[in-house]
Image (cartoon, rainbow, N blue to C red):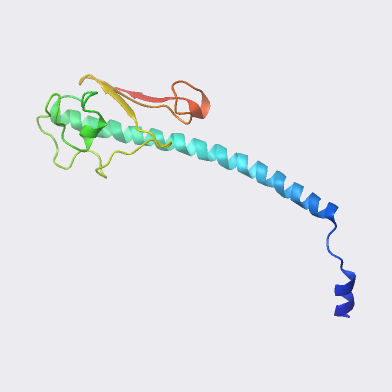
Length: 144
């Protein structure tokens, strides 16, 4: 009896197989777009959080030294005492960032930092890695 059932089953036709593949492709497309949108949003949120961590570290630097690192000293002054420019008066021996390294933005680029010692700005160009843009390509800027 089992042998009869197996002999009568010829498998799926090419049309049935094509329909199944088309349906699977449509489902993958819908899920893929949703996941990519969430991934892009998460990258923006991650970069924003990193910039807030820089703000906190720069605030600590300012409290210790009475100034922010200059553009020349850069964000590197948060992990290593600057050797040029205005010398910090009470630099913390541990630095000002927890991991002792300068993170890159969510897209693998360095953050841009500008400061005259009294105020600063930190910027990431976003997903498109160039100035301007909108949506997930929009530049992220924090200023003091």
